Length: 348
Image 1: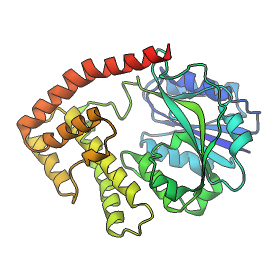
Image 2: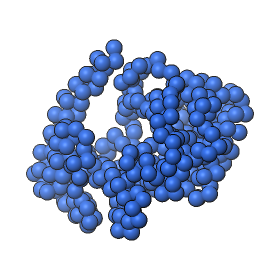
Image 3: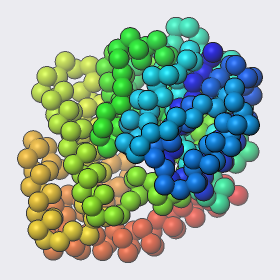
């Protein structure tokens, strides 16, 4: 079997059929690939949707059901039963363009390659994308060599934009951890082992931005608190690596640390915290040796401004409240829609 496609499923009934249908349009023959869907105790109608696909395509779909344990557990469960030469991941609110996997396997997946990285663009629930919606999978190789060297220079955060050789994952017993930003943590471990990485320009994956139930968009206060706790181990791991620094992935570790800090402050601002709650979580982050984002790492003036605001929000509770209002009422409701609209106009 050539490919195992792992799809964790939770509370995505609106998006799931689009995702699964796109996986059936990959130009793959029965027996060449498997689609392993893990129903992570989804409370909506996802179980019925999955059952229908498994019944109709029994030689392609394999459905595993477990009590809700989180994304990391669902992925690990599927990796244990995967049979493909290559393993890839798809988030169940995302999708791929037609024929993507066939093209990637036929043109780029040589035996010497351990990790194949391909490109993605943002998509929204209305079907529009920031780039040509009729894109084809054609692309070329832009990098071929030591994965650690490339990862140390360029962020490769997502697991759904990659094929992983299954024997490579098994050789190093690579699994997902119960943390927020589990993709970054997983890929950090992958690239610590210097895989042979091939990067291609094929723009095939569509990353959905309109899912209100996404883990990254949740605003439930208790869930925000839980996510903040899940971020701390990621930061501690990166700090430990930097203290033991062998030079291989020092830049990558600092970048991951900065990403974690950005998410930590973002989650705090979404939590609508009381003064007591704000104090509790600012004290937690200040226990870390580094608790301020490196603003110089932000690529745009807007990004630098937002990073400064988030850093500022950890200095005093009035600053936190003001930053929360600026980001929620000015940036998210006024500026961000205009930025997205300007991208759309360029695509028309």
